[in-house]
Amino acid sequence: MHGSVCPTARAPLIAATGLLLLAGPVRGAVDQAREIEVVARRFAFEPAVIEVERGERVRLVLHSEDVTHGLEIDGYDVKVEIPRGGERVSVEFVAERAGTFRFDCTEYCGSGHRRMRGELVVRDGADRDGEEEGAAR
Image 1 (cartoon, rainbow, N blue to C red):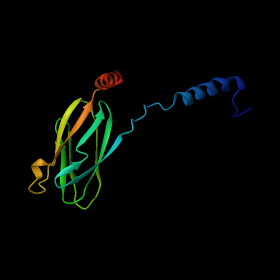
Image 2 (cartoon, rainbow, N blue to C red; image 1 turned 45 degrees about the horizontal axis):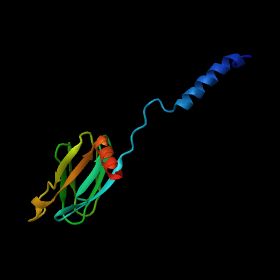
Image 3 (cartoon, one colour; image 1 turned 30 degrees about the vertical axis):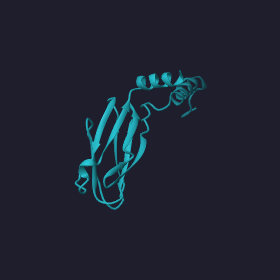
Image 4 (cartoon, rainbow, N blue to C red; image 1 turned 120 degrees about the vertical axis):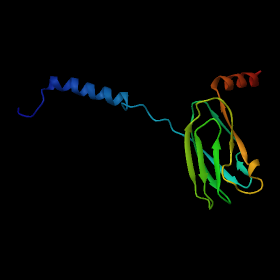
């Protein structure tokens, strides 16, 4: 019986393999990013208010309908140039701090440039639970 495994030796091997398969991958599953489309145009972002949950992985997919724009979110390490011509660019981050964070256009785009801004609202799960309880009353 050269090259074969004794049937009693096979059982623990099969059981161990089954446990590995049932346990799933050794590494934790990567959280899927929530994708949010953002359009930049003179002199606004659409949507102007982006709401996410604290701890959520967020991917902003941005494109310009006219000239070159930029987007920078205060309080986060997020800064990206949005080229003219409709090319899509994306930036990904984890919304780790709850609160309201302003974002601005970082590329001069005309006379209304300083008005081109929006808000990232990061809700804490506890805040959302309180709102739902209030709505139920």
